[in-house]
Image 1 (cartoon, rainbow, N blue to C red):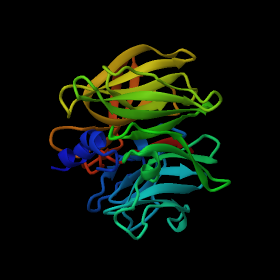
Image 2: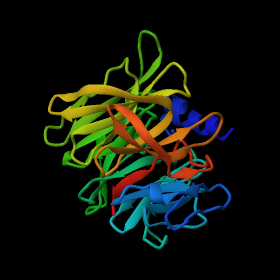
Image 3: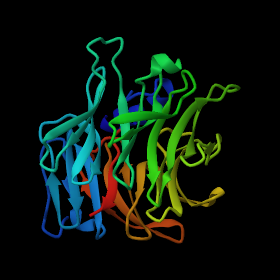
Length: 332
């Protein structure tokens, strides 16, 4: 029942409360409890994949697998230079922690433990910009100030150690989620906006674009598309995103062109149980989480040929990756 539990947190609960309740060349294979097997030779050259498994950070390249931390309880790791930022998920709060390359805790960027269960806070979905000086994340830390018990969008400035609110959720909407930076334009930030249709009371999500230069926020997808979990290519010209179907365990993966007028030339790539699609640094390749049947998720790689997925191979096996923990693709 791994998949159903994690997918519930990943697809349904964000609508309700907006917090968490969302074969190698060198024969490098790791076989430990709650950890997948890694097939790192299938990774594209120059790609570095950072993911969490069994509560720890792993760094993968085509040349090997490095377990960064041990005995942790973290999800959603992202590289920050030679360090890593990840979310420590506790029962009633979370922390955003910075680790060095050897897995040592060197800084706590956010601590939701106030000592009082009524005022404890969550932070999740960290995303580091291309300049490595800002971290976007979502949190309910100002819920009393904004009058909405849901996650709002923030940008943490590493030089000043201060966070700035970028976007606020509508009250009881489920909040905001999954910020991603445009690698080619540090002024552009995408995120998921969750809401209920006032007429049908049905939940939906849209991918939003925030432009730092103008301060404008506008939707890139429609309410009817019910889109989420976008990713932007390294040249800033392509976007991947997922659309929910009527079946909660079956979604559609799309690719589109991205420009000054938003998204265009949208194409359906595949339908299945997908999560967190990401572009490779090699043109035409992508990575994504996928589950088959009543299992957890594996990390996959595919090539896009004639707007379809081709040459699909596994980066992990064992179905032990969680649907509420994203991964990151960066350059080595």
